[in-house]
Image (tube, rainbow, N blue to C red; front, side, top):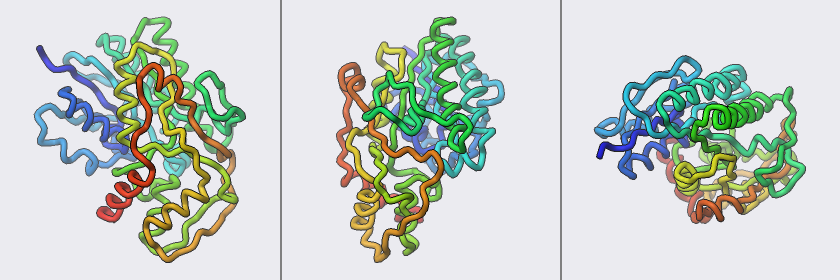
Length: 312
């Protein structure tokens, strides 16, 4: 039997590169695609000698063609950190809209199942806690974060339209804060920022009073949840994340303790529309996928710190 083929967009990014690893380990032929706008070839250079790995340097907002059969498409192309999407608002909207449209068209043409990477940001600054998939969110469409939030909300909407109107097999994962090796130190998210500051001997910056909460999931756990969702028979959105909630002040203190940096925590004004709380309800993932996170935060932070020390 010929191997199953999977196309991973955003393959040179943080999550995309880990997905490529997982599919190769599971015996798939993997086609990675990335325009390297925010991705880095360093994340996948270890895969180039693999006979079952092919890489296309391509922008998915342009027409996407891949010769031969495709069984699965994983659409993970998008700027994903505030620093990126505030710098590239148009590209962020285009990859969520045009990119998703192109890949859904490819899925339809190839008879492939497609999984799209949505986000907890579709819930905005949530008024329901923890966030369940049925919650419609509290998003400011014209605020600075709106370009990312609304790109992902549109992505979900067009994905469901292709599922219902064209009968395309679709899966939607709503990803909550994830961390681990291959994040960029300068990507502007809390953990890389804290660790970058510790490495440089700078004070650790927390926005607001640090009472806002996040839930951090280690990358290997997240990839396992995504892999299980792809192979499930559920077409609607599923939260995948770690429900262990922590304030950003406590999180900064954990990083400070781990790194042993002799710096202090300083506080700066909260950015506009910054969510005050974030915690996934993972009942669906538990019941339908038999999934829940396994990696303790202490263990995951250690592995991430070791990675950053190597690449710094």
